[in-house]
Length: 81
Ligand SMILES: [Zn+2]
Image 1 (cartoon, protein in one colour):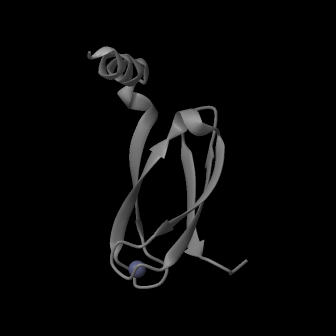
Image 2 (cartoon, rainbow, N blue to C red):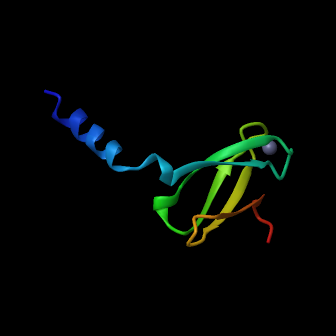
C-alpha cells in the first residue's frame, strides 16, 4: 500500500516554497561562507544552533522576521553574549 507516501506528498504541497529561503553568512569562528535554510512558517522570532560545515563548531543563530518579510539575521559564537 502507498497510503503513507501519498500523505507525505500532500503535506509537502501545502508549504509554499516562498516561505523558505537560504540565508548566507560567514562562520564566526573560521569565516567560511555557509548558509542555513530559514523556514518562515516556524515563527517571526527564532533561535537555534547549527554546526559550521567547515570547522564543525556550534554557531548560535538568532533571527527576527518583520511584517515585510525582512530577515534580521545574527550569527554568533555559542557561549558569547
Ligand atoms: Zn567554521
